[in-house]
Amino acid sequence: MNLVETIQKNLGFHPLQKIDPNTQEVKKPENMSVQDYLPQAAIPVVLLGLYKFSRTEEGNADLLNGELQNKLLKTIFTKNTQQVIDKVATYTENTSEYTADKMEIIAWEALHIIRNSLSNQPTGAKVKTFLADQRHNILVHLPASLQIGEVLHDDTIDDRTHKMEGPISNPMHWIEKLFPSTDRTKEENW
Image: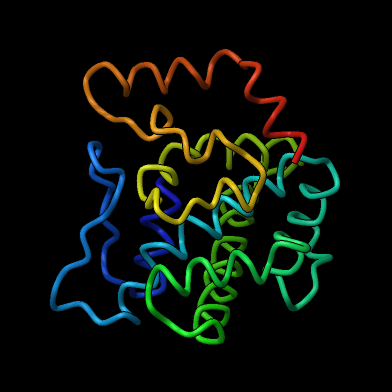
């Protein structure tokens, strides 16, 4: 399952584009409105927030048990919520209010999909693994100019090597999942 594509389809958004491997950017189609372009940045950013939130046992328990507030964005991004929303709004040329509303919808849809995907004996470890397995799918849609890694205090997010695809990179990403690296400790310390 590709969580990015599933959310895009479930919410009726235009298909997201992968970043250009040379520029690390996505070219906005000329005939696309700013409202229709919002998911290009909002979906990967929200999913990265959920990914980071799932690195702790408490975060996983919250995601599984439904003990979350109405404001899911505030829960997953904590003190960085407004900064994250503003970065996505600026990038997509939307208002912060509109962006926050759409990102909240995306977050709840992602949570719904995650819970349904793990409905057979869900555990915190399964949530963590599920989102870790989605990390590459998320990063290849994340425009570099957002510089969301700075806000989330994780330099691996904006690192080009994690976004590469091709005949050599794809098998390397698969191997990455098999062997935990020292970067995983950085991710968990957020």
